[in-house]
Length: 434
View 1 (cartoon, rainbow, N blue to C red):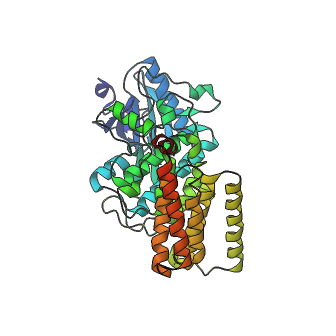
View 2 (view 1 turned 90 degrees about the vertical axis):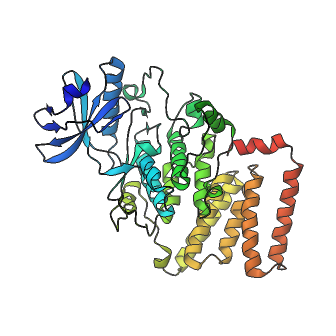
View 3 (view 1 turned 90 degrees about the horizontal axis):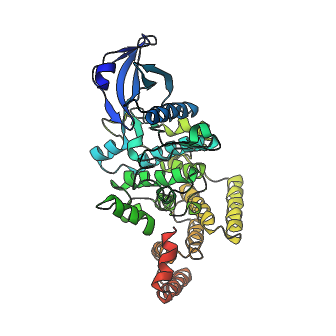
């Protein structure tokens, strides 16, 4: 038994291993230990069996983890062998996995979902920069520390672009990922890249927001069938307080086709950071007053947006920035990049709402443009949902007989007629690709 070999052992006359294993995870067992040289707690992960394939994968995971130098990834301190069993010494994390966190507390506050997602995004961006794809992003592979910082774990399925030393992996019948969280292209055995990890992040955010996985079936096969055939669900359908921009982001991250997801992790980060403000307490999980997102800003090259209460009145230069961004969104729309244009218009609407309030005329204008951008994508129901929300706002502000309200009602009626005149097969095809 592994415990007889490792329990209580002193590795390299430096790491004193505990008497009982902490957990069994993946291909190895996890133990706590004490580093006597530096007087600190560490984690020792030992391969669980003397299989040539397992040993090769175990060493590969340790090397890949060490390659990704980022505060959101556990530091690798040492790599060695004891009684013929390879082991790796890792940074000890004082925290809880997201899967355990949701099991204990249920769905998380919006600000914490955004803060966690922003940090994972920064890890994925760092991975992208060295050509690394994790391929198993899910709640049980992410830990939230007492400080509020996030750690992404388990690079056992990761691949490195253009580097055969890291990209080859023998699975011996094991699944390449986790059903319900791995992207459709991964399920089908196709090529994977940074967009594959973004799908896993989207599924994780959905889980944190709703307390359940985005796709769930009685069996593995029914779950896979839902993932491949059904349009991605929206967290707002299960939770009323999900902001529109977060709902749209998660929905886009879960798109079946990789090209319909956000272009990269930086784009995801930019959406999440403004929502990660005024983090509420998580008693027993995170120490009070922690706000970890700002520490990640320098790494990803982004500056977190201020809270609405601290935003200064718009200056002339700020208005020019909005004008330029609106022009770029219009250019994206003209070029046929409708989804990118919609995201840019929503971002502008959110920023203006923070500065001037939700009732500012440009906020309405940009949200209207974003809603209309879904029509050429074939997403008529999504467009209608946004248009109806805008209609309610205009009725409240301008009254039911105002010209803007009447025009918006007519536009909604025309869109409903288009939707009803389409065949069922015509309507469902675009939804499956969202």
